[in-house]
Amino acid sequence: MKTWIRDPIAMLADGGPRGLVVEGGRIIELVGQQGPTTPCDEVFDARRHVIIPGLVNAHHHFFQTLTRAHPQAINKPLFPWLKQLYPIWGAHLDRDRFRLAVRVALTELLISGCTTASDHLFVFPDDMADAVDIEAEEATKLGMRMTLTRGAINLGFSDGGLADERLMQDYDAIIRDCERVLKKYHNSSEGSFLRVALAPCAPFNVTKQLMIDTADLAAKHDCLLHTHLGETRDEDDYCLHHYGCRPLDYLEEVGWLNERVWLAHGIHFNDAEVKRLGKHGMGICHCPTSNMMLSSGVCRTKDLEAAGVTVGLGVDGSASNDSSNLMESVRHAFLLGRLAYDASEVTHLDAFRWATEGSAKCLGRRDIGKIEVGRQADLACFTLDELRFSGAGDPIAALVLCGAHRADRVMIGGEWRVTEGVPVGMDLARLRHEHGVAAAAFMTSA
Image (cartoon, helix red, strand yellow):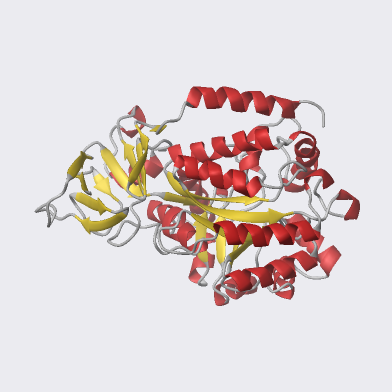
């Protein structure tokens, strides 16, 4: 079937004033003024829509939808925030609640125009050994692409880390499951819906040996690596105290300074470190909403790009955001960038690039992130019907400047996954109720 998505208000692409043609899950034509070059089987009238590439979320923590705006955690920076929440997660997280948390996070992302997600999963209570499988199942049900990051924590409170031991696994269990998940889910072929990356959580809650050995596993299985780095000054102090070096030096010691790696946050790097990141072809996932919420600092997005670093975008955890809306984070990245640089140096197109091509490249993908012939047909279609858009002259810029937050339609691999603002087949009221009941348990004492 060839489908002509016809005559949008505007489309974020190089060409295609009259839309695009989709066949077999891919974009096969950007349509010029004369219409498609070959007959199409069906036509979708997009005259109400502004079309952008499907957004790509390069960093998240799905389970945290269960503790948004938690009274014990609000108004705190990262380390005190973690020290409050880890015992709560350790006391109350189980597989049923986790599944609902995943479903809510993915649904929120999808509605916001996100077509590909990456979740930094590092919590594994006793009954959640198959947590990665749960995420794969939920993403498949929604028809979303996903990079499953098999994370881990194995350094708890008692050993000088920040994590609750109830969320940890031992070293052997972690390595075995990394191998299992890679063999079961990692598909690096073009158009794949599931890929795997290995993702020990952070320098302050995993052992050095685990970092070294996951790097070896990634090389063996040709997959990517992900972790938190450079998020706060507290992290700098921790690494200096425990490892005698700054976080990026520690990363080099454990074999992670290479093109397989994309890092979450990447705020507190000096000029020399920014150059090193670029020299080694690494990626940084900018998480503006979380960084503002926790007062972590401001990512040097333009400096990083100038040095050759790939910059992507993520919503980060839903307890430090406290949302899973990637379109909202596009606006936050744009506004925070204006504060860090100036009004001409960071544009709405920069923010869109980070959330599409940049994030896709962080995840090692060249088949998504842009509307062009040969790419996967992953699209987010927004209307400008709301009052907030009245008077807007530039439709693409209006999505950012006027605060778009909910897509009317979303296509993934040529299939409509959201229509009229609702995921196909999803009972949102039921999901809201079930998740709310699950989240209520986390309000009790840890």
